[in-house]
Image (cartoon, rainbow, N blue to C red):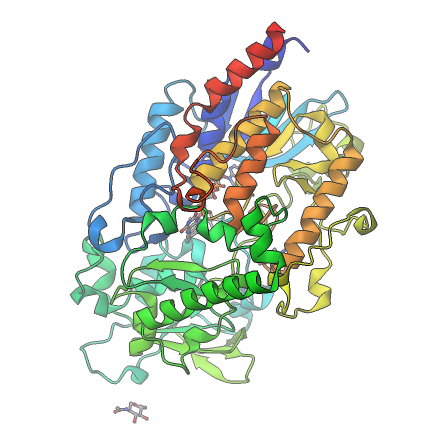
Length: 609
Ligand SMILES: Cc1cc2nc3c(=O)[nH]c(=O)nc-3n(C[C@H](O)[C@H](O)[C@H](O)COP(=O)(O)OP(=O)(O)OC[C@H]3O[C@@H](n4cnc5c(N)ncnc54)[C@H](O)[C@@H]3O)c2cc1C
Ligand SMILES: *[C@@H]1O[C@H](CO)[C@@H](O)[C@H](O)[C@H]1NC(C)=O
Ligand SMILES: *[C@@H]1O[C@H](CO)[C@@H](O)[C@H](O)[C@H]1NC(C)=O
Ligand SMILES: CC(=O)N[C@H]1CO[C@H](CO)[C@@H](O)[C@@H]1O
């Protein structure tokens, strides 16, 4: 195709979270002239949108880790004490500014537009069925290409037994709310419960708000209602007086809790922001001699184990977590995908409140249902409750997007014949079924650091993720008309989403790239990555969904990012350093600032030849 035809063809970018915003920005920078950015929200930011963030939300990242190269982020308040920890509001303001100055200066975002369904017609055109949430009408839009940036935390998952309809059946009349609505429905929650009248009052006389789940959302939430927070100065709750003054009794139920990292002082940048953690985590390819030493020799594995054990011990020590504390009901940091980063000690954090008994913990236990006035536990116990917050995670936001269940909602004179619609999902191969290609994958990954993996139910390992690099459905790779951004799971979303956006743009532009040359090769690579994910993070399939875990480099994200750069024939290892200093060099997203230019130069150089 002629370059100007490629560049002027309409592209839909779905979602205005960080991934959608940076994808639109990079495509526009790259010369695509017909980019449409759609979201069902009223404002930009996704998880960090103004309609979602709430006062006590602090994120796992510190200043500099979660931003894009085109815009600096102001240093957050009290950075010295907190190590630069970012709040939900910091993220929100940043995303709003980025959208205003780097996206909305070129295109108009279409808000309150829910995507119901994506289907590819026989002629290759994407038919995007949308619902206009203002006029309550349905419509179809046509695009040549689609980038799905709908996020990992936009479709709440609630097991049937804990749903509000089941609660009603069981005559439990208090509010039962998924975490995603906990802030917007705060008044209901508060109305259902009485505050503790004074310090030292016998708490067991009031029924608590029961928070179900041991993940980050559960923890963050229970922070706000605790009256203790009021007195503590380190993290500012000034915007939170509303909540804090409403001190409620809170009980948290979980089977296992997230592992966490904390240290008495903020970690220095040469550890926190360098390749250090990445090197100490085995990755799908061991790219350096140092990594091969650490992960394939006996002595290397001892060093790696020592480092992770120290980090864990140091974190427990920082919070003085007693040996019998439920906070120790976590998988080790090394094997865990959902570690929380607490940074430094905070007297008013979840962990402090559990230690002091301000937050009651019921664990290990699983909530399995309701009675009139309590939550039913797997242990047979009944936990009295007035209101319930269900923090059971999210399912894939791609579920249902590509299937034909929505056909009934389409406008009746739809030009799309139904037979075509049913085949989109099959055509792009976005299933969860193992591909049975194991025999074609040669890697055994007999790393010494992967010995003694935790055992998991083999049934839970019957899944596969047929995405190439976590970005493109492998089966669709030759078509170059569909990609996803936001599903490569790393602790540095800013860097990852920006680089994935470049990869997608290069892929759409048909730039010279290192790509599989056949669909079959792409499928084998996708299966290889699925096998690796199961090996590296056993059991992950039971809670990681496609839209936030299509690929799981996690700690080894710098290596995965280098691979993406090399896919575009761009220089990798951009943090530099010599043979001795490279592991300690700080990785900054500024390394990507000139990538559009570099890619343009390469493209022009190549076509001049
Ligand atoms: C409580 C909480 C804490 C977190 N903490 C951290 C952290 O500390 N560090 C970190 O890196 N990450 C954290 N995350 C993960 C967070 O999801 C990512 O940081 C980031 O927001 C993902 O960006 P995204 O653009 O992929 O998706 P999102 O931010 O989820 O944005 C998705 C966008 O897609 C839109 N959308 C979805 N479906 C449709 C549809 N059908 N039609 C139209 N629009 C649609 C949404 O409206 C939204 O605009 C946290 C998430 C939660 C919920
Ligand atoms: C929470 O999820 C439900 C179900 O998907 C959705 O209808 C609702 O709008 C979400 N709320 C927020 C605040 O995102
Ligand atoms: C608190 O109340 C419970 C039940 O009403 C009672 O069993 C318990 O002894 C009381 N505790 C204190 C410290 O008064
Ligand atoms: C691979 C997959 O789909 N995993 C999970 C997605 O999320 C739900 C709820 O957390 C799980 O039940 C799925 O197994």
